[in-house]
Length: 314
Image (spheres, rainbow, N blue to C red):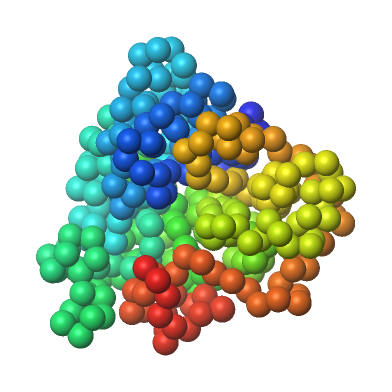
């Protein structure tokens, strides 16, 4: 699957399989990225807020020096954090310096939530009442306008978004942006199929990348009868089925691992047919939708399974 390329609306192509680096601990992520590159991964997903871009950058430089991969053959994604919404160039430059790169292939707005860059915390400022310290005079539309200035600089090849619901997507597109997002990276798995988002993105030429494809830690999704049924039918692991689910839907997927054997196992993707997809998509017909990544931003992100009153773990 590392060889499969999917089109972006820029004319570029994104590898269908990438290595996620969220929650990859310092001291582990460099070796994980190096191993992934050695075995054939060409898509690495990063973010400022993961606090490990410098170590990922060390892996890149070592891989380039050793001839494992050339920069032009590597697809690197990173993300703008919420406290940089009104200083986009600065946020990008910090990530580029940490990664040791002149440009990234895809730069994403991590959440459509502009936070006060001068608050009581550099990454997660709060008011005295505990609510998030948000910028009152700035919206995600302002942020997108600033992001749209980046491609001409040569520092990014494409720009996109993360965690956008249909409501936020419509707001953005209705603003007549000069650039349509190349991608929307979302939490996606059979517990959270997000068919409305995927169908809307397809209709607008916006690629979807799935994060947290196995659900939450402990991966109870792997024990689901429908997942096991497809795995037995195909003679593969449950994890393979859950990653293959995304390729069958035309999405790229970025499983996270720091374990060499798991990094390699995640490359073993199979083709699923319509009956397999129907089985997997049918899970939420009898069970509630489960979203595992939904920080308390003190703002309604218009997720159908959540409301502004829901407080989830950040």
